[in-house]
Image 1 (cartoon, one colour):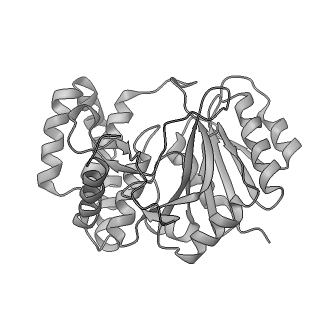
Image 2 (tube, rainbow, N blue to C red; image 1 turned 30 degrees about the horizontal axis):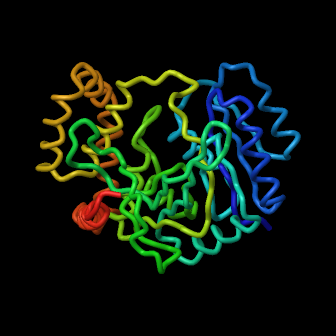
Length: 314
């Protein structure tokens, strides 16, 4: 019986989906389930054929739901206890990567993990000099507020599993049960800020986030997207995080930053938030009962690693 499902939501990825699925099958063989979620692609590529060739489950959203909603949808559908969710432009290397992910996620199920993300160029080649060791969340730079910031230095070279403030790199794994307990990406719309949302919640619940350093997955980093992004929803996702998780003093400080930097997008995002007021109220109520460790538990770990990561510029 398989214990792991790889979930791949995508939009207009074209042949990269085939390359990603092929890489999974060439390394993990049939030891993992694969679920492809086509988020209403418009590029006329025959994605269904990939499902037939590589024996993967394939579904199509009738309208664009966004990566966060699609991932949660997929996690709700899987029959395995554990999952790995990745983007549609990834590469896999070691034949036992799937064993390691199951081993780690099953050993401590009260956590969200990410694999060691390796930077690839558009041809799938390794890019030297850009190591990744998890991320912390930015609270200082008003132009990048709430954005994850890569930690480029291995702060714990003696360990293979290390705590990090935030997952990053589009290689996220956990147990289905824990992810759904902390309500996954519920409330996020379209694209943006999935990592801060799930990471802050994991720490506030009393679990945490961890990097699996000895499991490497390649990620092709692009300069653009094969789809349009609505910046109103991008800002809305920030507001969702602020309203549902943040203490009032820090929330107000960040709102002041957003007023300086987001302009009309902040006003539009606020209107979207008001349209979903009932959903926000329900989330706030739910989080008050399950996120018992509080926001300070995240803030402490975030400040610690931000300070360590910036002790010297590398």
